[in-house]
Image 1 (tube, rainbow, N blue to C red):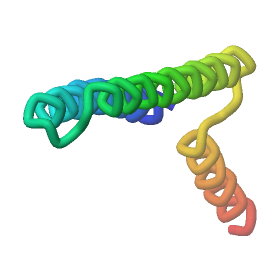
Image 2: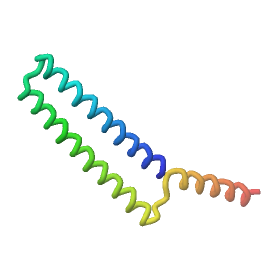
Image 3: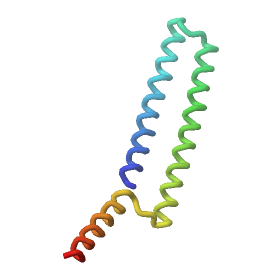
Length: 95
């Protein structure tokens, strides 16, 4: 569970850095005249909207992870550990 949370937080950090670089590139294109100011602003607004949507999705995932922890669901590692213990106990019973 912690690994997934770390991965999600890393993705958010990478997205924030990427967004800054994209906005810088858009400004540079506008300054060079390759992109009109209107087009640049429209692209920036679209990028901000998409980032906001992605962040909302991340919050939903974090909420889901929190609910799973609250409900005490076992993660894959815990289930795999239990499977190994069961197999070991079954082997002992056969002996």
